[in-house]
Image (cartoon, rainbow, N blue to C red; front, top):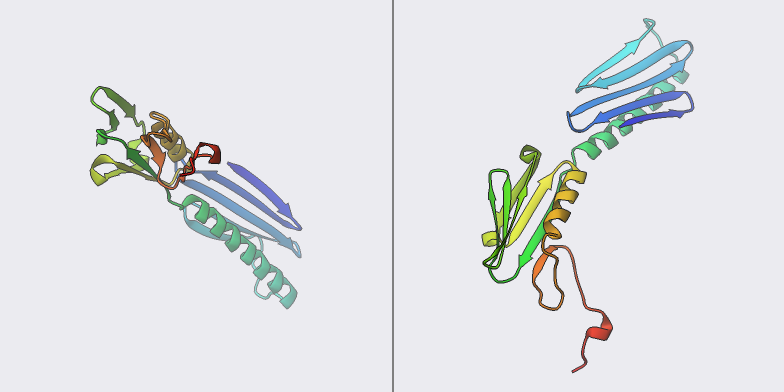
Length: 185
């Protein structure tokens, strides 16, 4: 992802590659023909000026402090975006519905005869735990797109049936019948 923002005199360049864990951020700010450049590249912070300055007056100092504050806020939002752990819980309901994880294969058993095997390509990027004797699948990863697609593949391998209360659903889902199907007793 490449972002280039320009506000007032501040130019911000953000390059984020989540798959190889590479971040490149540069902010440049000009005042009084002095270019200040802050670069964050693979967790190394560099401060570069093209002139050696011994004294900075108050106005320039305030501008520079504002520049540092914007840099820190941008850095915080990017690190928060990259370091957020996403979790999905999938509940399996039904008699003889069980799941097992063997190496990079997730095996879902529905009844006695129906098996579904899901091969997970990059098993190192995702943490899969199976709880409650195979009735709860917990998926966690830093990559939101991968975890949501894998969760939807698992969920829609056996759709949840409202009337028999059998199938796969997210643990946070609250599925209700419509009013016309409910009977007044």
